[in-house]
Length: 205
Image (cartoon, one colour):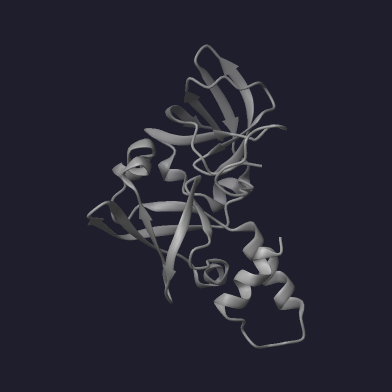
């Protein structure tokens, strides 16, 4: 389990034969779980100032592998007793979205990200979403995607400041929103619930 709060930006040393090797200050142990751009991966090798993780076929099929170069977000898995911040993140990427617009605001930057229609019901205004491993709040949702507003601190301490229109990003929708949607799908009712009803059900968790 993760929180969506980035530990550091690691440098990609290599990505070949399904093995991604990173240079980082963080020192994991063999077998540790670590989120790389939001994807939960297992440490399979370590050396002086570097470590390697392995990407399974399923992982490579779902995430934006073209971004495994330059620098990447990393976050180690939570340990018992850690302070919980951000939101509950599994490190299981649901889909890949695309940055469609980037708008500079007075005290922030707005990103509009589109994604496949089946995942839109899991995005709730003022709810949580993980983009490339970063825990963020959804501002609003339309028929094609969702809007985020990042404060200057987030822009400075993540890679979002380097993002450009057209970049593909890893998306993990909110765990509780997925649970609520599954419960509602299993019910006899065919009426689509309002955002207010979904938020009330999510609050129960």
